[in-house]
Length: 239
Image (cartoon, rainbow, N blue to C red):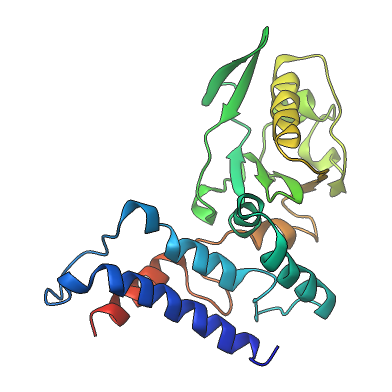
């Protein structure tokens, strides 16, 4: 590498600004214009910010050299479909899987797919449980105020406090909630051509940062939130 990580981060911000400025050049005389871009480019700011916050280019809580090198290589070699999911994973609330999910027919069975939510703390509730699918890993995050009913039916323990701080397999229990979650997990796992590691963690686990670092929409130690990044791009365009 001939450039520093910070220079690469700045370059990605500049690329996002340049692309959108080129699309909006006819509107620059109106300094109050909204950041409206062609549909095909609407996610450029989100994916650029996700790249900046990724292990490959993160500066706050700098990753190990080997981890950074590995993720830099992924950026160059991974098919776009899987790279996008690593950069901006899918987040699903599973505590509402019985009430708020899309139901599709899977042969003779019904598959319940929870509605995806944005990667923000605003969508994380201590009363909830969540699956975060980053292509390489699937994290199951259990809020500390989760109901006893949920942990009894999904983990076969009486209360949240009886859960292990970290575990790597989900018991298969003979009840509707457990089966719905297992079917959904199987659906996620089978949707990729490679294996995936499952990591189940409590909200108070020492490894919770593995989950929370993926909350791209929020402000981090060294990087803007998504809303702030959009505001920054707009300011650069209308200068």
